Image 1 (cartoon, rainbow, N blue to C red):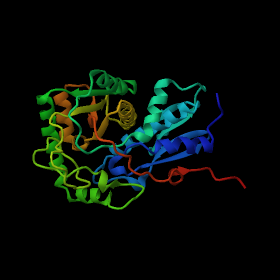
Image 2 (image 1 turned 60 degrees about the vertical axis):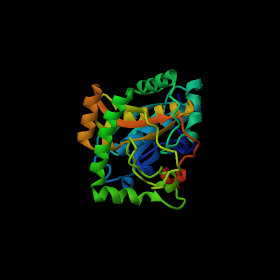
Image 3 (image 1 turned 30 degrees about the horizontal axis):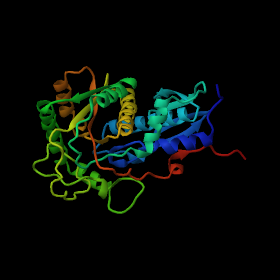
Image 4 (image 1 turned 180 degrees about the vertical axis):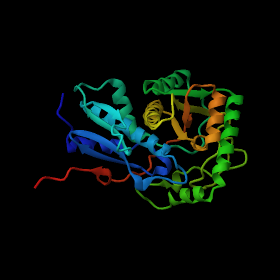
Length: 324
C-alpha cells in the first residue's frame, strides 16, 4: 500500500473531478493534499443562498466530484478508500481519500472514466425513441452500486403525476425574487469558465410543455421541436437525508449519469421538486419508497452537444506550501 498521494496525482485526478455537475455550474468544490490523503472541501464562496439554503446541492455536487475522483484514481492504478465527512469539527471537508491496495482498473471503471469528458446536461428536447429495457436496468444498478435507489417512472399517469408536482414546485421557486436573481447571476452570455452558457440553457418554456425548465437561455425552439410527450423520468433517492446521505447520493448521481453517457443517452436534471420541501415529500409519498428523493433526471436519446466550461484545475487546488 502506498504511503500517500502526490501533488501530481492530486492534480491529475482533480482535472477529472471538476467535470462533475453542479447547480448553475457553480463548481462549489476545492481539493487539497493533507498528510498523503486527498480531501474534497466545499467552497463557501460558491454557495447559492437563495437556491440552496441548506447546502444540499453543494453536497450533491461534491459527491459527484468525489465519484469522478475515485474513478480517476482507480483507472490510474491507485484506487482510494474514501471516508465521508471525516472531521466533525470541519463540516466543509466532504471526504478524505487515502490509497488502497494498487490494482488494475476493471473494464467497467474504464468505460465510465471514458464517459467523463463526454457527459453534459442536455436541456433540449429528446428524440421519441424509447430507452431499451437493458439500459434502464443498467441505470438502476448504477444507483444501487453506490448505495442508492433509482425509480423509473413508467406510464402516462405516473409521469403526469410527477409533472404536476414539478410544475407546482417550479411556480413556488419562481415567486421568489432572490431565487430568480441568483439564477440570472449564473447565466453567461459570453464564454466563461463557470455558470450556464445561454446556448446550453435549453429552449424557452411553452404552454404545451409537460415538465418545467429553469429558462437559463430563453431561446425560442425550432418549429416541430417540442419536448417528448412521454419522457423517461428517473428519481434518485437515498436511505436517509443526512449530510453524508447527500454526499452518497451525489456519487450515485454521477455513476448514473456516466452510465447513461456510456450507453449513448442524454440526461438533464430537474431539481425543482427536490428544492421545495413540500414537493419533495409529495414526490416521496407518490413513489411509496423508503428514503428520500435526492434528484430527478430526464433521460433519453438527444442530439449531440458539448460539456459546459470548467475553471482551470489549479484554481480549485489548495497545494502544500514548499518548505524553504
